Amino acid sequence: MRILVSLLISAIIMIGCQSKKAEVPVIGFIDAFQDNTLQQAKQGFLDALKKSGYDEANGSLKLIYRNAQGDNIALTQITKYILSQEPDLIATCPTLSTIATVQATKTIPVFMMVASTPSLMKLTDKNGNDPKNLFGVGETLDYIDTSFGLIPTLIQPKGPKIKVGVIYNQAEPQSVDALADIKKLSATAQLELIALPVNNSADVSMVTKRLIAEGIDVFFANPDNTVFAAFESIVKNCDEGNIPIITSESGLVARGALAAYGADIYQWGYQAGEQAANYLKTGNSDSMHWEPVKIRKRVFNAKMASKYKVNIPVGYTPMP
Image (cartoon, rainbow, N blue to C red):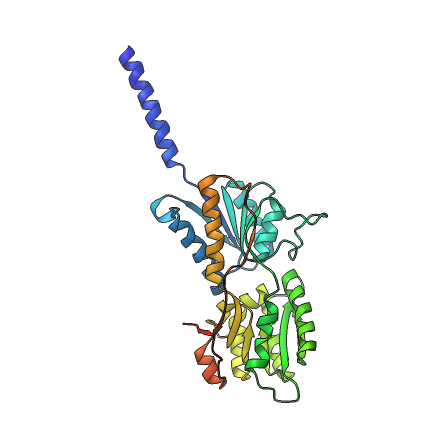
């Protein structure tokens, strides 16, 4: 009888150990829409986790990934579904996903990437405090000055002033704030700015054509998720109109922009992934907070530089 009891206890202990071994961290990942640039951030995030020992391929991580494909209703439904799975943390990309998730949970840690600061996203409370469960990596608009400042150094005007075309989505806080900065910069640099609103990615092609018809010398792709989602349409129209594109997002250069000064999107995701991995290891977020982007760079597209006969100054890195 004693032997039988001993065997039962041993079996229970073994089952308990196996159960603990079977437990792996669960991560929800919410993308607002399908986009090649945002995919770089996701890959960076997962690579950072893998380096720290969390990899879905070997069973040390369970990833629940959902993409809203640009549909706000779907984004709300996806957020509710991810929360129902009770993940250890949620990764969000870009700004729209972050806003939706932080508004839906105050307890599950949220690790953002390709997103603005909490204040720019209007997520701070009445005392200016950030959400206690928001971590990851955000971006201020301080770099816009340098990004927009590339225009006078790279673009030659057809008239007395360089005409700069911009589109923006009024529903995106970082886009509206960026436009306000761009307007001030245009006045200081003696540039003529033509800015037109869009409601969604379906409007982008038509509005880009309107800007080209206005005689712009250059298109500036500001930090706007609608621009990200429809960038191929912007490139197609600008190529046909012989209009170069300058941007604040380095990932867009590989997709057809002439040059950029901005965050390395892969490294942005990687930085957020490092922070998430640290949380999974310690299970403690007391000393954590969201971080600003660490890596920015000047990059250019050699094919576009040749097309528009632009001499790229020293200090720019060619994109593959």
